[in-house]
Image (cartoon, rainbow, N blue to C red; front, top):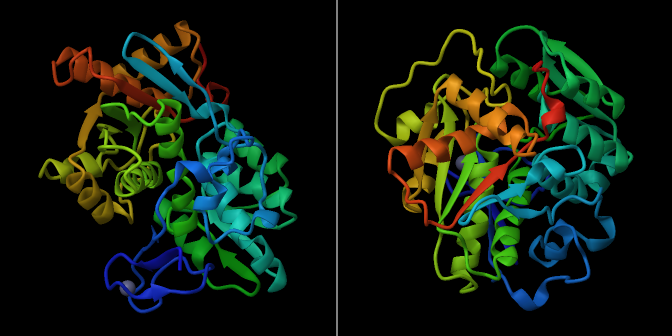
Length: 368
Ligand SMILES: [Zn+2]
């Protein structure tokens, strides 16, 4: 086999691509590539994520559902800092990497079983899954929290997904989406291992765009952990395949309000707020189911974690816009964290750095 899907806790193998958790112990699943990355197998004529199709061995190339995602620009911001413009993906966020891989792998199976897919998200992931599902001719039902509003919610509905509002906390929304119902296949982006696996492509792109000399540091915002874990996996795969010499230091950036990873990573106690009011309204996973895996992987790869304050996020958001980079406030968290580390001398100005700008500014409801 070119890959395996196994349990992150008990190591049981999963042979069904529709599984979103271990069938023995219910823990999260992880995908492991068994075949080395080989630069010669890149589809150089394809200027999308699918130039790396050979490294997603569980997908048949004839069954790919694509809207032109990936191969996003890497733009120089200052001497040593580059931005990776993930906001330029088809639905406006990096989540399209996960959706294109997940839906490409599953749409035939789901249709054959005469089923529909379900997902829980009122934000970028909900919009992204809705777009790829409709493009593949699949019915999608997106579970959202009752107070959902704004451009992302509009986007989900315009893609034609059915929406169900759920009262209560974020985990209640997830539970409702996962509940067994006739014809329903749960593909939640946080738990489904193939969604996370699609994010691997982001690391390949950064490395290739730097001609296989990886940057020293990569800053990215972290909520449920799909971006962090996908990027770590991609860079690890390149090192294991002897394509690149070493891992960049991955810096996980969180808001003070929602910072379970930062606190656990630094050995500090974390109490989540009763109500999340941060500008960074896409970063809401106060109790992420993948936390154990995130801490383990970040430690093993000698990464780091930072938190930023609300005023720092807002200043970073405005500063980016004034330079012409209009991103959603949650994306500004990574830039705010970089600026903070620069001021505190935790990072030197000459370190080659990439900051991932995850989502488009047009998705924000903030008023100037
Ligand atoms: Zn297990």
